[in-house]
Structures are given as C-alpha cells and as structure tokens.
Image 1: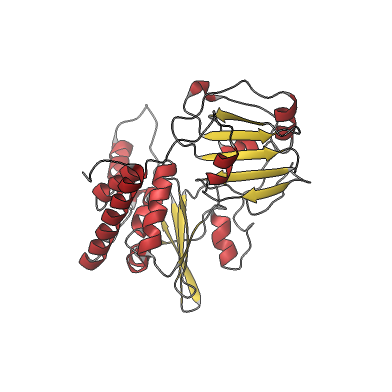
Image 2: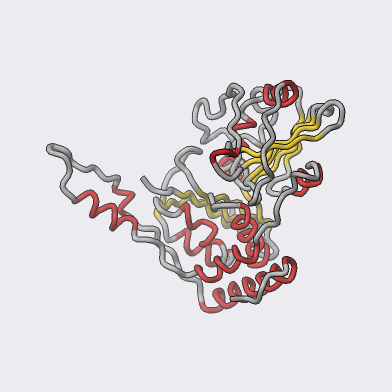
Length: 332
C-alpha cells in the first residue's frame, strides 16, 4: 500500500537517493516552486536504495551540475500534464526540464547506470491481438492507420497506448485485415495515441504517461518497423486524423487554476489512517502487519515566501494567457 516515490539529487559530482512511501502523487507539486525548494523537499525524505520500475510510481532527478530535471508522475490526464510542464518551464528557467517517459530507466541512464538496472524480469511481454473500444467509457487512446491506398481510419479505445505497443506488428495486420467497428471521436483529449503507417512501416506514437521501453526500440514484436516518438505532443497525430475524427481542445486554464488553488494544501495523513486501520479488530486470529515505512509521512518542505510569490505570479500569468487563447472567462 502506498504511492512510492524515488528522488535523486546530483550535486558537486556525486548523487544521493531519497524515498517517500506516500510521495508519488506529489512529485510534480513538490517540483513547482523551483530547483531550490524541490531539493530541500527531497532531501527531507528518507534515505533509501533503488525502487524498481514496478514499485516506483513517481520520481524526480535534480542534477544541479548539469542543470537537468528528469521527472515522472501519474497526474490524471493530459490537461494536468501540460499544466505542470508549462509551470516547470517557467520556475525552472535555464534548466533542461524533461519528462521521464522511460520511467526510472531515464534516471539511471542519466547517471550512467544503463536503462536495465531496475527492470523486472519479463517487464515487456508481447501480447496477442485484442481490442476494447470506447463502449465502456471515454477513450484513453486513439489508434489511427494509414492504409496501403492512402486512406486514414481512426478509432478510440479504453485500452492504454502501451497495451497496443505490446501487440507488436500484429496490431498493424489486424488494422489492415480486420479493422474494428467505427467509434465516435473522444469528448476529452485522450492520454495517448498511435498512428500506424502501413506504407512506411512506421509507428507514430505520443503519450502523456510513462511508457517503459520507449527508448529501447524496436520493442519485441516490432522488428523491421520504425518508431517516431513525439513525447506528449499530440499535434502530429491530430494533423493526420480524418476530418470526422478530430481531437478536442485541451482545457488548460481549468487545470492551471486547480494547481493554483490547491497549491500548499497539506498531503493527506495516510500513515495515521493506516495505523488506525491496523489497530482495529480483525477476523479472529488475524494480526495486521504494517510496513514500517508506510508509517512515515511524506514531509513536504514549504517554499519560502519569495519562492511562493514567484510561483503564484507564474500561475496567474499562465492562466491569463490560457484564457486568452481558449476564450475562457475571467480568472475565478
């Protein structure tokens, strides 16, 4: 139980790891005020060895020597992802700010330790063909295909983009020979998309989430195919979609307002809730066993008044710009 986060701080030629059992949902939050505040917050956490790519749900590497920030977190959607990145570009001005699409692999690679150090055995297994359309909910992935005759078709699915990558080129064969039934265009911008070009044997791929192995192409099952990875930029696939299947706008202003209004709220006291649950009477003969690390709260370090003032100014300016661009109402 928990939302485990890994942090690495590099300074003066050496690096140190830190850990929070409850910090994964706050990685981007703790980064927003800038390098100094983030470093103080991460160094206030526990010292810890490496997590692996399954148990780690959020991470950040702050390299003061090379002025590089690598980070990832599961943020809830494309709007939240873009809002966080827009703020970080301002509060980390002069730094190379990168989302770690390969998860911990990007962090260990930056440290010269390779990408496979923390991979679990069998971390990527090719899957057989399957398809779940959007009948069960709003699509999180859009898959499009350019057929041999130049036609482009598109579909929405509640399956994650990584699941389609896991099918290998059998996905391309299915789209060519037995395409799924038509699906309506998404109401919200999905979290990722693949455009399969059967003519050029190329997969164009974008995602707002971690996608393990995306830097290790060809992934199993895609030998002979090229990958054109666009990070979190959906505009390339958007330009290729048929007219009746366009992406909706990203509601960036509301996501920025949510960041502004929620910043500084203390994290939930998860260890206290867990301790009370563990102390409650259980089934006869049962004894609750709690990981001691789960009883250590995430200890955020509040930004200084100057850091907080800069952050709020950045958020207000970004909200105003987003509202101008999207024709939204006044700042609430």
